Amino acid sequence: MAVQQFRLPDVGEGLTEAEVVSWRVAVGDEVATNAVLVEIETAKSLVELPSPFAGVVRELLVEEGRTVEVGTPIVAVEVAGGDEDADGGTGADGERRDVLVGYGPGRRASRRRRPGAVPPDTAGPAPAAAPEPEPEPEVRPEPEVQPEAGAPAPAGRVPDDGAAAPADDAPATRPRPLAAPPVRKLARERGVDLAEVAPTGPRGTVTRRDVLAHADGTGDAAAAPDPEVPAAAAPDPELSVQEAPGAEALAGGTRVPVRGVRRAMAEAMVRSSTEAPQATLFHTLDVTRTMKLVARIKADQRFADVRVSPLLLAARAVVLALGRTPEMGARWDGRAQELVVPAGVSLGVAAATPRGLVVPVVRDAHALDLLELARALAELTSTARAGRTPPAAMTGGTFTLTNIGSLGIESGAPLLNPGETGILALGSFAQRPWVHQGRVRPRWTTTLGLTVDHRVVDGAQAGRFLADVAAVLERPSQAVVWS
Image (cartoon, rainbow, N blue to C red; front, side, top):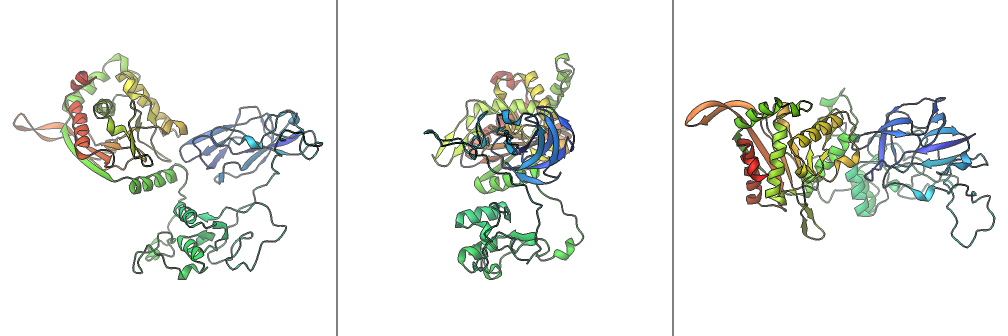
């Protein structure tokens, strides 16, 4: 019998970390190959990880609720015949090996050995060909100890003055410094190693001021001026709520960690608002004919097993309008200074879930008839709300539709999904006073809100696209002409 460690894999799209949500096994349980071991939450969805081997669970190396990086050992399983394992498990010498299952582009082939390969420490003289790399020694994750604000830097960090170097017997690995994504970006731009920066933020967090002070060679974060912020500017956004003015009003408040899908959403919206010049157009229209058509479609037996709503006809209208103004689905290539115009439509549909906003994509929506589109939307939304949308299903969109009307909201100015040129917010469908045939009557109306990347399309293109969507919703028979 031998023990193997299963490392957290990259489940797709180059994700670098994930949170362990719940273990499906306990110490002592027997597991079969491909049996679900654990449920993790990535920046995009919930994912169940299967076991790459059969055996008995000997140790759970990461507790629930903890976020760890890809490649971190998370569970140890005792297996039989470890020397035959193709993923570099336990050899005949009984030594524990690590297993990294490759689910995506993060697959680390360099840590694997061929079946039957002899460990380098027992092999004879190396042949002429390059030998197989030696599996990395096991590094058990130590409990993470966070220092209080103002406490000395954790062991292994080098103070700015170099007075206390790490001991010769210090471990080869060092804890990942705590810092927000904007601070990490600033450190990369300034060529600063975060591990060498003395943190002054809460719980040992490296702040923007710490990085600037280290880059300037002062080593005094409190005295380091921010060259981008005037002296009388607003408080540093990296300050904790305890350090910010008016913090007493938040005393006794509840702290909610922002991670997984919600953190990914927050980071995406920051990129969206800073990378693309965005403009928004609104249009209010009479959709009474669309509501009558929705009622007729619901009565059609072919649509009996799918949900029919105004969102379905709005999605169809968007697809048709994109066919008439394909630039609305283009992407901006800043390096080449070119527009990449897609050959078809991959429609993203924003879905609110308990874990945050996600945007799964209906592939080749232009090639689907109305019934196929209805089924695709139904599957997309049900999977998203269950938190089971795979990461690959949320990439490659060319345009996004968000139904804020389902919340009773009349209109809104949505932010672009990063990389896309347009997003349409569908307002609530409700009966309102409307002038129809010279008289004020109750009519079904809605308001569309279209946000565009003004680098890619101008006002005329955006206006024409929005008018085309409205034309189909006002007179659904127009879809027959454009289909």
